[in-house]
Image (tube, rainbow, N blue to C red; front, side, top):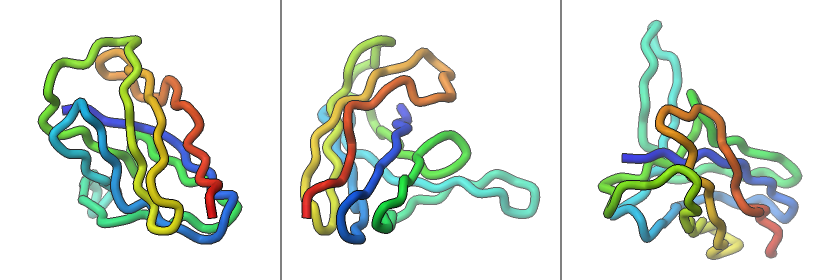
Length: 117
């Protein structure tokens, strides 16, 4: 299992992230984490709204993408292709830089700006 952290800046009309795909995992799930009765709970989400001119952060202890059933081990420093599927904008390609085991910050993600109309 792996996790992807990233930010999306929507400079176009309102949109929604409906899915993420990657050839390194059999599936990618969008999740949210929230504190409920003093316990951190992770739940799948079907989509994430992206309001106009706002940045949506996917990071530790919040929204994130889980790379489920990895096809091979990921190596620190490698670049992993991700495809973001938006309700309006369609498919947007990006790459994520793999951080070390237990890394809590997003090391880098090539431009995931949702700019198409």
